[in-house]
Length: 126
View 1 (tube, rainbow, N blue to C red):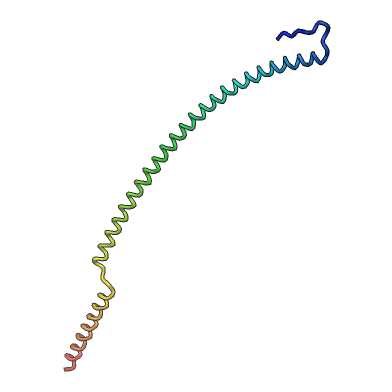
View 2 (cartoon, rainbow, N blue to C red; view 1 turned 60 degrees about the vertical axis):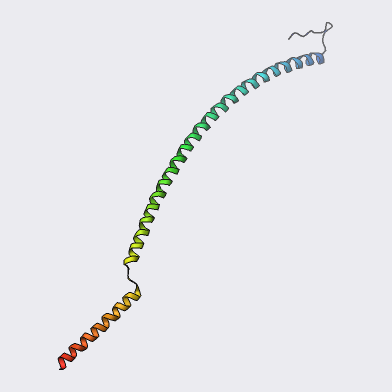
């Protein structure tokens, strides 16, 4: 930047104004350069971050699918076990005796024992 200095000598105020204009121009140029570099760095970091997020997202999706597969397999095994337990319960109920049945059988047995005992007593008496 070429600045013309007034021929009669410049006042301090004029020199300061000229220096300020020159510094403003240089400062604007430097800020513009830094702004461009910063934009480039931000773009690069943004691209890297997007790539990392994409990778992590893929890993999470893979892990999620794996977890869902394990849960599905576990639920199938659990269902099979419950079905087996239900079958066993049905089988047990089919062969299980009730309290009323046992009471009747014990009553019959008691009366049979009493009758047998009375017959034996009568034989012994007579």
